[in-house]
Image (cartoon, rainbow, N blue to C red; front, side, top):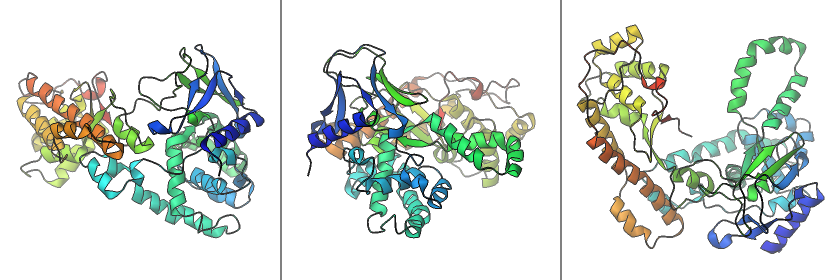
Length: 462
């Protein structure tokens, strides 16, 4: 079996042999001792704007570049699937094909992952109180395998072996996509162009009427692509020094800062909190300024109807009203600034309003101002304390455990501690905040949270 270094050298040569331009000032480095696999460092000083590497589009791996795209019947079956599924099937096929064009690439990709999707039950218990486990989507993924992937595997036995192309491989390929894939905007255009060419004349006549709807669907169904070499760059919050540029004939990674000899080259994955870093990539940052806490909708509703005096129909009307006005969503976000979202304040006002007060809001289609009254303040404090109570340990206990914690345990602690710090600091900040007198009626002027984006923080679950 080839060594770690040998597979890396074969991969580097494969890139060069297939048209990739690699700077003489970069090298791949072994970061396994830090739990990061491979990474890329500067072997010489690099100036801002310098090209680090350029990849021809022929080297990208997607449902459009795979040999599966040339097989009649299968091509259409795969194209009919949504989301990640087409690329998962592509990776399942190409990764097990001994003469695959991308074999040197697959040889440097991991087969084992440290994401919670693959954790044992004992490790998952360390995440209690966070929203990570509920977002893993393991059951939904396995349902996709049974309903969409497995039928294709069974339909094309000359291409797939159900003993090899199984659920385990499905999860591995899904994790590769989550951790290593990129969105390629230009392939979206190509996909749409190919689809347009297939349209019948009758369908083309309807195209103009459906254009807006198709654009919305296209935004939701992003085409994802594996980009060899670009995915070798690691992430470190606050240290981003490279960026991938999508050109018509190539993808180019360029330095966006001066990089000194010996420094690692980072292409960060966005401003992600530790919970998202762990769920998607299997690691956390020791200190993460982008940590956040989500307050879910049901938690808010529960504390605005503690005495159970409001019937379900009225509550649903209030929620619908708030959602139509754009101030209520699946969750509200509190970050390291410890500010209460204005939308949350408005939502509490509406959810706690009497039937007659709410009827006036509906009639005028106007929200109350985001006034931090004593009642609203106390309800939000109760919400925060209830959210904090979901964790089975205290922040002090976590701090003690962190001293000797390693691996999954340490990652879970860093997530929990980051969230608890935010909640506790927000409770302190809110407790000291001044309150205003309650307004007897909704303000005539619609000065609601959706018109004050500077301090508003609400977010859909991802």
